[in-house]
Length: 481
Image 1 (cartoon, rainbow, N blue to C red):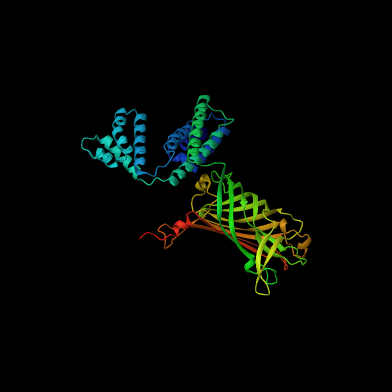
Image 2: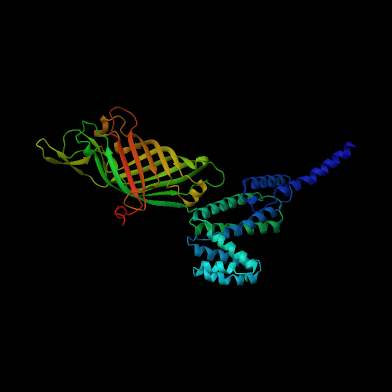
């Protein structure tokens, strides 16, 4: 009796195991998009592979072939015009009718497509509402009208494409499970061909929307207010320590490698180059004294940053850990200020950088961390390469500036090259004015640096940049009455 029971149990398990695998790997359009389904399918596949069973790629091929038309259905460009959206929706309906061998419906849609292309939306509605119109044609036109009226935006299209791309990456990892396993040659060949078609479809569609490009860059320009916190004993006054100029530089960053799937950490390269004022120690030209003061001077700067980014999905933010190396190259050797003399007049004073053996071009390096808040899906932010423009960014860290290295005139300072930096930046904010119906979009950033340690230190400095994306002169004109 025991022997018979054991035999029955063994037979049940032998039958149930492949049935269980088949059930786990039976996909539908929605299950293929989920981590849980793909994870369970890969686990079942690995188990069957270890058992030496002949693997079937039919479930994976079903998922692949179901995803391809969904990708192709995303338009290459999102039309903002309702008439164009209606034309496109009707053309898609005609394409679907032809694919279903419904030539009659495809032909019947032609008049509606022609009227939609001419912007005659009301005429298209009349076709659908006419009592002589067949129910199938009327239903198809009404569906197109509903689709055209829906708020399908570029943001939504990008999110959909990002989801499709992540699904593609998961299916590709699933396909790797077949390597080195016993698999039906014909079955595996069909799966590979389908995967190649999926890859072509997804990358073509991503390219048409400019997603997942290897690099992104932005030109940052704006009015810059600069101030150095010189002490009361400095030879230049507090007002002379301030100046205003214009900053113009290019900020760039590579795509985030490792940002696919559910990874909490990714890496990227970033940097900037352009005209950015540099905090410099200056003294009076020809002066025999050792009196110095801090002042911002015009400079060309470049830097390269290696970043490791920790994702904070709940806050739609990232915490970057960055190492930066770069240079500031002074573009002028002198600056001029007018100072009040004892007789009530003014004296023009020429300032030159302190001769500390550093030269005009000197390097710096930083180790920083901070917080970048995006306020939207991180996967979409990475796909659109919007990581350069977070809604809010805060950075703090250590900076070693060889321009302040302890040499010659700088020997008297405590650890002059060791600095701390703090930066905050915001994305453009809408600011309402009384003189313009259109709000101004203003962004600002603040950078403050100060001595890391010591009592006799090089003064701190603050750089504030203000930028807008509108014609300020036009925006400040009185609104027409």
